[in-house]
Amino acid sequence: MANNPAPGASSSSSKLQQQLLTCSLCFLLMVNLSHKIVQSAEAAPDKDGWTASRGNSSTKSSELCSSSSSSIDTATFLPPPYSNITMACTPLWNNFVLRYHKGEDNVMTFVLSVVYTSGWVGMGFSKNGLMVGSSAVVGWVTKKGTPMVKQYYLQGSKQSQVVADAGELDLNHIPPAAVLHPPHIYLAFQAKFDRPLLKQPIILAFGTKYPGHHHYRLSHHDDKTTILFDFSAGPESAVVIDAGEMKRNHGVLATLGWGVLLPAGAIVARYLREKDPLWFYLHSIIQFLGFLLGLAAVVLGQKLYMETNNAQLLPHRGIGIFILTLAILQILAFFLRPNKESKIRRYWNWYHAWIGRAALFFAAVNVVLGIHMGHAGTAWKVMYALILTTILVTVITLEALQRLRWRPEKNTDDINNHHPHASNLQMNSNAIM
Image: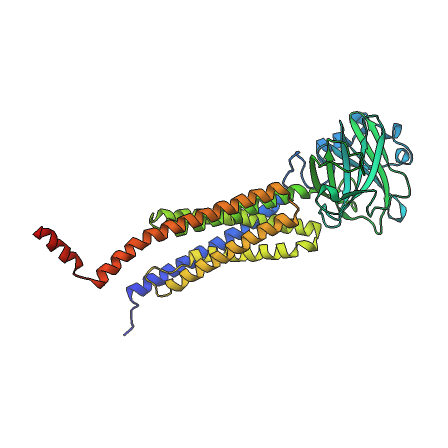
């Protein structure tokens, strides 16, 4: 005679199958979402409306580089040899337009133009996409109309660490030139490189204040960006990627996802347990949104790393992938959590709590590391310091209130446990009185 399975075992098995199916669907959804985020990141337009893809495909690009449209013939006002070289032309960022020519022996000729009113404009070459350690050619026209061109070496992020008449660019062949042809300024220079330029991080910056008279110290830039330019392709297919914009988007997504939403979800889970089941739904929604933003940040960061190939970012990248792994484990654990009556629920609670705490700790460390390695500036440091301070003050306050609320309950339980007839004696005493 066959043994029929117990009803409880059957329902438990059915629920487990449903959880596994839900978990599988969730995993497929995350994979599909990652793929879509990668596609959108590759085709995302920058803030000026250009797509970070192929050179002169847009109408705006063709208008800025077309001599027939702009009626600008650089040969009429640029000095030789810049006036008699046929150059490729590609818009880069804002009103910055780059003309370049690849000569023999890895000699490159550049003409950078931009709308100009005052101050300085610069074009830097970086080995890893960062400003620190890069060399830049900066040009301006003084108030008296004197053109000036200087090479600067960026030793650090401070203004005093931007050194004039220094740098690693070989500019000794042809004198550089700065020409004001209203409303544009043209910065022309020729440099010899050790090897052919392929995918090269280029730093573009400008400042509306003139450099100082003492050591030609540059004023702080009004704006800057990093462009990854592919010189190995022709002008019609040169890849232009705004790495600076991508880096900012990566930082915003990581800070909001890992640094704000995940701690907020953890706070809800610990201090709003009395609001059942509201705390559970809030915790789940906040954490899942934080995971999505964090996932987008990792995808953008991975793309940025692959484009710049910056070995200095390996620790930041490794910690980011580790945080993503912990977050995925938390998502999977959510769909595989056992019943409250289950014997293993206790161990699941420990696992879920400590994996979450580890993810929060490494997330905070990596946000700080990213701000430092990306030279994000004082504003980012102050912003995240305020976020961390707010989180810590909130946790300390709520923890203190919770412990104060637990203490009277514990004292009452202790009295009742040690004096089981205390309540009866009190009632009798009141009755006599």
